[in-house]
Image 1: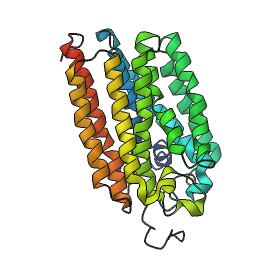
Image 2: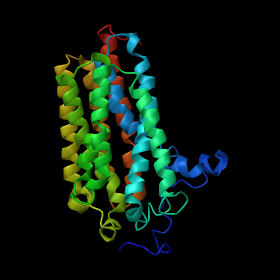
Image 3: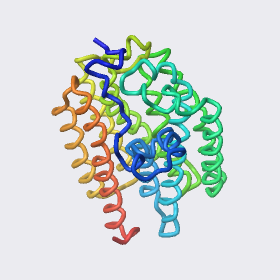
Image 4: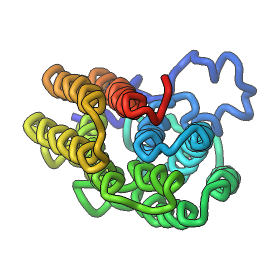
Length: 315
């Protein structure tokens, strides 16, 4: 049963790290904004960034493209921060009813909606500056993502599958990264993007299991609620679909065996996530969710090694 009193067993379930670098080093006035942008919890930035890096590495033409890794790194930090700030503005009433989120800056009253909107505008302006460094086709592709960015927070109100819409949003970088290098969209990028949607369905369903007890009372829908304790077969299916589509992207791009070796190691990591997952333990759900960073590095290493073997990227 959900604990909404703030005094029961889930009272200390806040997702805001206590005693971390923000509390130790950041000025008090900056702390709510750091937490709005989730700078203290970078896993979401990594999950937004890796599809960009995978696509840049797959579309790679030469070292003249290396700056894109840094550009997308900055863009991921800023746009993840903007997305989280907008999400918190839209969900502040829901967040106040969920143990994990009730201490976030908006529901706890640390910042006002007006201040959060000003911060959002600042982040979007920085993100636009990064986007405008890309070619014109990539700028158009990047601008198109805003439709998803601003509609995703609404989906948890109307469907039990907001994780699908998050997948469409978070993996847009697979299209944008390819477009930034090649100024077009080709089959490998489309397959990479589609695989990313399945990957997100897996990892964000795991993440949503943290709030499965609180979400019904708050009126929040999720795939974790839809699938319940029968989620594991679906998680295997989502991850298998992701791996199959990523492999198809490699085949479409003519990549050599290191691509598939990296992906195979990543697939083992994904299978471990599901097998070892305790859906009734929020801490374990969060740990398995965060472990997708390891999958992402393994897959990226395979792409880079395949490019190196082909003579296009020296290690």
